[in-house]
Length: 381
Image (cartoon, rainbow, N blue to C red):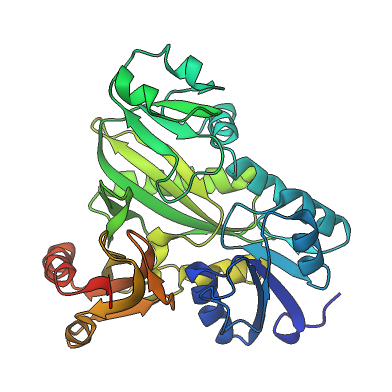
């Protein structure tokens, strides 16, 4: 039993040392919470700022078990980790949030979809298949083809419009999902602590880059009715409660042309769609995640100013040492906050940072965002 949750008395381990871990450390520093990271990349964004950094595989049983053996609490910034090791750590008295059973569910998109169905969570119609042979029997084009495991950041997802595209798609256990004719893609973050306290963040609206299949722009508040916002928050709260999850959960949704909300996917950790909360909400998503896993009172999630976020990704023709062309011009604009992730090399579509833009309303933010998008380029020199 630890005597206090801050300072050297608590050893908090994070599986993953990427940009999410980096921003989690930045939030943890305000409360003198010591974070220890494990990541396979010796030059990961957390490597130089974590209280301690270990280089090793996140999917190897012994590596994860050894890393967690002297920790009081383990959390994640990526889902692809060794769940069996986390189960063993729980048996040894280490707290793990989100819980291993939640991570196991999230790692498999097929299990996710079955969970939605079982718990009356609205989602697109789907079918589970085991091979490309089954895929080639499907003729109700278009549909979405998703790998059950291993996909991330748009990888492992394909829109299938004809037999030729199906022939080029994955030959692995997969989900075939109805292609939704949506009007908006939305996201809501929800947090829950061990006491069962639940709080949601304001709904955000996402615009995706069709080539990279990554969020390009994000706007908050979302341009939807109060009824849609309330319904989205209710779905997110229902989900985290049904999962009995402790931590922060990102819930990605489609708003259909008939104003129906459908859950697309969920992520049990801080999320790209919540980066704006650092400048735009009373409590950031990273501070809220820490509060949730430490069973502290959850923070106020009120929006204090409208915000937009632009992902900074490597331009597709550049590989090598990163150079942020136009960064100084960006810093001259009021209400613009760049966040660089500390990655030394860029490659096509690699997430290298993000920019938060604040303003009075969505129209101002969209105009500002269009201007800023052309100002800065992630290239190599």
